Structures are given as C-alpha cells and as structure tokens.
Image 1 (cartoon, rainbow over the protein chains, first blue to last red):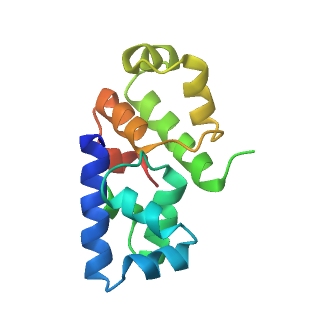
Image 2 (image 1 turned 90 degrees about the vertical axis):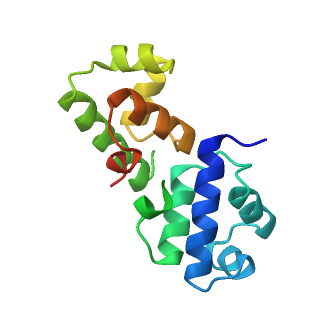
Length: 69
Length: 69
C-alpha cells in the first residue's frame, strides 16, 4: 500500500509519539489533524507534506529532522 | 504565496543544489521532476511531499535531513 519511505516515517512518528506519552487522539486534537489521518500517516499510507511534518514535530517538541529516517 | 516552511526548504534546496554543481535542468532531468516544478519548489510555492524530498536528496547525494532547516 504505502511506499517504504512513508512506512519508515510512520513507524518513526509512532515511536516518537509514544516516547513523548502522546496518544493518537491527543496528537490529532493538538495538531488539528483528523485522528484517522494520523493513523494513516503512522501506517505509511500517506505521502505526507513538509508542512504536516513540521506541524507534528512542533507539537511533539522534537526537530522535524528527528521524524525522518 | 508560499509558507515560511516551504520558502526555507526551497532556499536550502537551491543552496545545496548549487553547492553540488547541479543546474535546475540537470536536477529535474535526473529526478524526473518537471523543471518548472523544481523552480516552484525552490521558490517555496510547493508544499513538497516526503517522497520528493527523498528523491531530491538521493540525486543530490545528501541526507534528506540536510534539506530540512
């Protein structure tokens, strides 16, 4: 379904989200991204844009670079 | 027109492209991205996707992280 790049990004996002103690629901709520869309990103089903990468990093208080593999 | 994030990415891409000795035409040809689209990316007019970030980094022989600010 997703590309290896999107899947690796999704796995990394999920690991960082959990390490910061965020649920998918909380991350979705704080970023304004639909919860089902956060799930799609984490499963690598979305070719995410740079603005969403920065938005997620901002709320997870990490560098956008940390979200890349 | 573009967002500050896209503009910063574009400026960074242009600087790295030039430092590697690539013209826009060569980068476009090697990546298969339309040359006018490369121009739009560098002017920050495109909310670029992660797959294109990796594609550009691959051909510029740099890390995708290097293209982020």
